[in-house]
Length: 364
Image 1 (cartoon, one colour):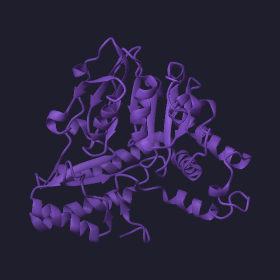
Image 2 (cartoon, helix red, strand yellow; image 1 turned 60 degrees about the vertical axis):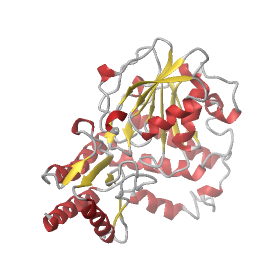
Image 3 (cartoon, one colour; image 1 turned 180 degrees about the vertical axis):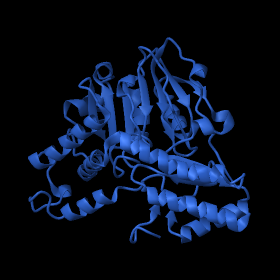
Image 4 (cartoon, one colour; image 1 turned 180 degrees about the horizontal axis):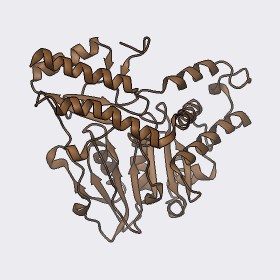
C-alpha cells in the first residue's frame, strides 16, 4: 500500500474522492468559514449555506458550459429515483419511450418506466451479455416517443458510449452517473442529464439533474410534490432540506477539477490511467481478457477476467493483500473490475498494472 495509509481504491461506488478535497473538509469540519459550526450544522435557509449551494451550481455550469436554457438541480434518492421520476414527469398518456439497453441500469430504468407508460427497447446488446454499445444505425425510434433514454457508461459491464444518437426533436435523456465530468460533452445534445454523485462528483446522497427548461415546461404536475422537477427548479433545490454536506463536498470536488485543469486535463489523465490497465490485459496473450469489446471499452470501469478461475481467485486475494480495494467484478459478470474514476490517482493504476504483469509472470 502506498500514499501514506491510503488504499488503492478501485471501488465502483461510492468511490475515491480527491485527497485534497478530503483534507480541506477535514480542516473545515468543526468551524466552517468562521461560523463556529460545521457545514452540516448550518441552516439550509442561511446565507452561508446558500453561498455553498449556489457556488456548486455555478462551478458545474462553468465546467460543462451549461447555458441558461437549463436548470441545475440537486435531488435525493440516487440515480435509481430518477428511473421513476423521468417517466412520472415526461411519459405522457398515448406516448412511448425509447430505452437503449446497455446493461443492468438500463434494465432497471426500463422496469420503472413500465409502471407509468409504454417504454420499448430501441436497441439492445443483451444478446452478448452487454459486451458492446449498439451502433447508431441499429437504433430504431418511433414517432410516438416522448423521450429517448440511455446510460452513458455501464459500470458492471465496462462499456461506454463514444458518440450519442441524434434524436432530432425528441428529448434525449442520459443517465451519466458513472462518467459525468470524466470528459467533455455537449450538454446541448441532451434535454436532460442525471448523475448520482458517488462516482465522479462527490459522496453518495446527492444526485445532479441538468434539465432543459423547455422540457421542464411539459412535465406532469399531477404527481407527488417531491417527485416534480418543477418544484426543485422553482425552489433552487431548497424546497426541503437538501443533503447539505454532500453538496458542499460536491462543490469542492468541482473546485478541484477546475484547479486540476478542467475537463481537458481530466480526459487526458483518464485516458492515460485506463491505458495502463488495458495494455496489461492486451499484452498478456490471453492470460487476462476483457469483457467489453475494444471499441466499446469504458475509461471508467475496466472489466476483465483471468484465464483460469482458480488463478482469478488467487489474483483477487493477492491484490487485496497488496492494498488494492474493490477489484471484484459484479456478480452478474464475475471476474475483476477496476473503476478508475477521476479521483483515482495515476499511481494507483500504475501499481495495478505492474501487479498484473508480475502476477502473470509468476503464473504463466
